[in-house]
Image 1 (tube, rainbow, N blue to C red):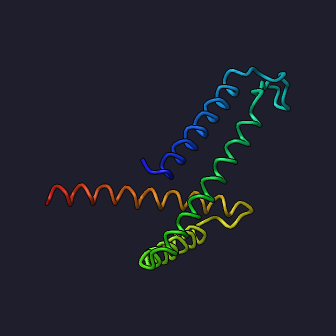
Image 2: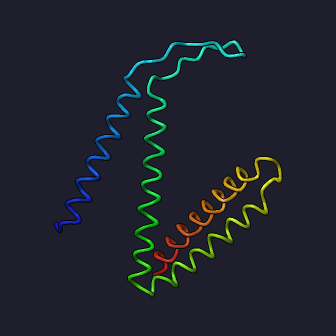
Image 3: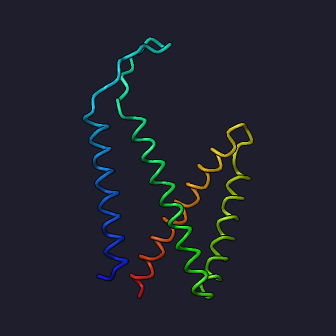
Length: 139
């Protein structure tokens, strides 16, 4: 293993360990005091819900920054990758545009856009899987 691989493995183990620790706090850390809602039901929230949500956001931001950083690094070091990046970027913008156009124009237009985009990507993935299997069967 090279030096960077050892560092990456160490960071991965630390993040995984912290995630397991925070999950244990969430599931086994007890409950906050119960309270009644307006509908008359009783709610008992977990004690460490805020910690779990903050950790999720930290991981999401970290993953986004690392993904974008390494993508930019790959583009800078390999000009051929710029063509693939450009095609992917245009395809992404087109798919978001189509999803936005299909969304209900209410105050939740971006929620509808996200749902439509998820459905479109799921259909593309499903068609890709089927086409790949048919191609392998024919080959």
